[in-house]
Length: 415
Image (cartoon, rainbow, N blue to C red; front, side, top):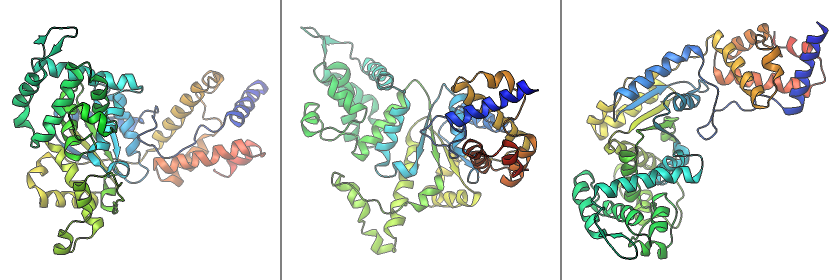
């Protein structure tokens, strides 16, 4: 018995040295989550996976109150559907220059390292140029294709798929330069990954704009999604924030057409405020994504009321788009067993990550340093809300680590 008590004290001392396992209670799209979904949500996850695998070009609303784990669901989907390119965006970070920033998120999602991100792009441009008959080459010191012929072939094949012909021609010019002109390959690759480019670099490519230009960014986003080997899912978190987007402050480098969106004469005709107009333009851009073949869109919202408001806005703009809308899926709170499972899974991962092997050896069937009574108390007080549960875990573990009181005294406050 004394030996086991020593093991318990060693674990407490370890926590005091390395810190709490529970350091944050908000999941984000940027920080990877390795803790899987609890048992009661596995069916929920499978329903989403089935919809993704059986359908194309849809909008799937997921309804969940604050703290129910909507963002954590994104990471579970990435683990479950690893064959898909599942991209997370938050409207707060992409609403200014929506298409450009969304494209940047897609590029970022292609790999953890820069080389991993550009490799799928290189494969795509190589495959496209081959389809455009770039195999016919002029022979000399370098094997250079007849680029104008390739560009014309590409435009002939794609012109019906794209509304903005000028933007399409710019994208084709960059792709063909990347694959067919060794002297311009570096600049073309920078353009394709969305780097900001100066006038000199653009002139070498015979282009006037980089991907900050709205129509070019949308066209390139469409080309990327429709021609990557992986099918794409766009996960838009906290979609209701679109109604709280305020009048943005644009850079002096913004295009005139973007500035005109801020000072639009229609405000004076229909009494629309700059704030409302800004959010309407973001919504228009999101709905425009339906023109991208194969793009699946998941949106998360706090309530059905927000969803109904969104549907009314769609109906006013284009009723046909309502056909893309799937029946919403409703997230539920934790049941008690979910919280026990989450707690154990979290500690297992934490102690494994810090290579503390004694935890799995001695505490695999234990809730130590907490106990069953404390966990039941937390569940009752948090009312099953995952975020509130984690807040309690953070509070208690911080007390355990920083307090000089005995563990039994600390836990007595939560029973």
